[in-house]
Amino acid sequence: GVPDATKDAIIPSTGVTNEPSLNVSGACKSLVVQAGRTLTLGTASTTLAVTQNISLLGTINQTNATSTLTMSSGTFLIDSTGRYNQSAGTLGASGGTVRVINGGQYNLTGAASITAGTLNIAVGGLVNVTGAATFNLQDMTIDLNGQWTSSNTSNTVNISANFTNNGSMLGSTGGAFNMTNASGTMSGTSTTTTFYQLNINGNITNNITNDV
Image 1: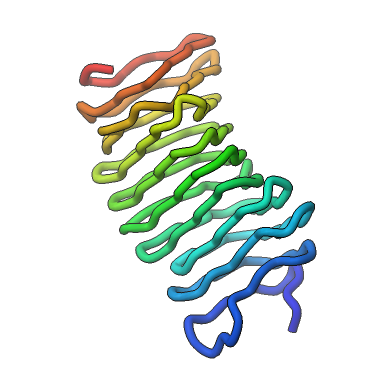
Image 2: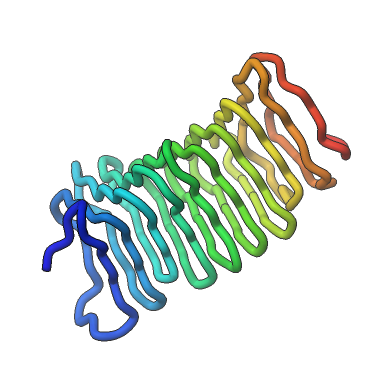
């Protein structure tokens, strides 16, 4: 049947005639987009509200400036063949974690808005920012063999608690990072911690063991 906030929504790898596109606002308990499938969020003033987890092995294309994807809690997992291509619109996951891992990619090509409790770029994950995206995060963690890259100087990353880099920021030429917590930390062992701009407003403890 039609998903709602009490039902899981699964877009399967097989048996799908047309790739789904959200034309009106909707809700589901959890969302699974399997490999080979594409979900498009391209209609103005629409919201897809997910109560729990999102598992992405296929593709989500978010293309409209007034489209919104929300996740109340849990983890938005962008895994292996998963591609979240956000050129516009809003991702709201203030109570959850966005995790990119194992070859998964989060590609931001426009003036998108992202709010999350934690952005975790895990082993093999890539977050690639070429647009003027704005991140509002509590914590940002780049694990070993995770990759963050930003080439847009209008990209803004607001972090209210902690930043950790044990992975790579190699090749980043953009991204203004704003640390705004009275007791936050910056840590990690990577030699590639590179900020186009770093602004600190608060009492931030720097535990990074290599050059910034």
